[in-house]
Image (cartoon, rainbow, N blue to C red; front, side, top):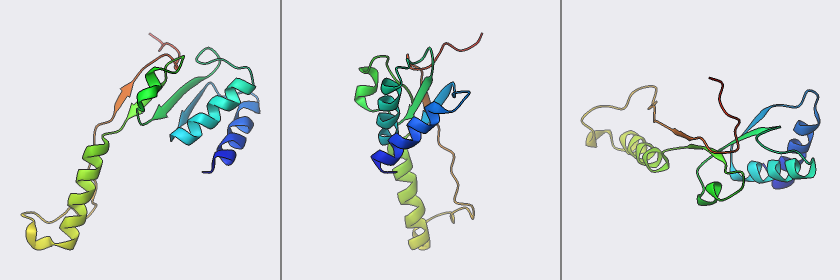
Length: 121
């Protein structure tokens, strides 16, 4: 999604009534667009809007409030993708044939920081 489209979408999202209480940003471009729209709307997070993003950029913990992040196992994702591709290209190199579904579940980590409201207890 181009930056201006992400920004326009974020502005539109923040203008609906009732306004969402949380937004999950799928990438850094969407996050920056949302943060700009939040700032311009004079909203604060997490008191008025919880924000979660993907991929833990080093600066996520330095932005104030710090950003809650879903950390994906990027290295493992690449390794699995390579092995699946290799298995399809050279089945003679594998002890086991690849699964027909080609699905492997990898563990992500949720780093809870200040951009999300306190969980209910």
